[in-house]
Amino acid sequence: MKNHIIMLTVTALMAGCATKIIDHSDDIAQECYKVAMPSFLYQARCADLSATIFGNSSICTGIQAFDPSETYWSASAEQYIYFPSSWAEYEKDIDSWNTKLFLRLLFEDQRKAIAPIPTGTKIRVTGIYDYPRGEHGHILIVKAMIDSGPNQGTEVELKTPYSFADNGPDWIFRNSDQQGPRLTSNPKYLKPCP
Image (cartoon, rainbow, N blue to C red; front, side):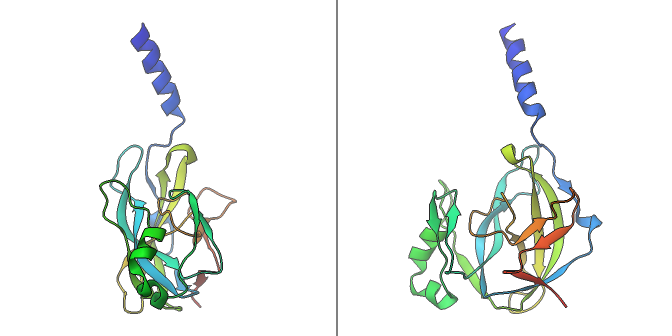
């Protein structure tokens, strides 16, 4: 009887959880954006698209802006963080910046910035996913390809609300008026290609 009650309780709790990755990539035109301010590639914690049931994170390439004018709450570090003003500032004290910007988990190597990305670099959205994320239900995951500059051909995951990337502001959002794959970019970081 006790086991029966436990199983019913677990089933009831899981009934409200999102458990499936939904791929909307075929539902969109591959939208083009230009990076609106100097940015950098980094080793990000991203959604593992091969995960099953509740999802998981893996290390991939992320993108974030050099934006020292604002501080951002880092839930994983439980503190406010700010970003260097340029690649040159980052390079002056690489170890210190890496420790501040990229929380190191147990059994994980220290993550780091990879390369600078100049303003005007073209990015093309290549994948949109509804991804299971615990108390948030499904979250938006957006994959993109860098289409110009020295890092052309690099796939990145764009920062979205509640995504695994634990650094900085969101670059792209799902339109709030629907559940489908329509996107809106944060114009401070991404502008539509002309």
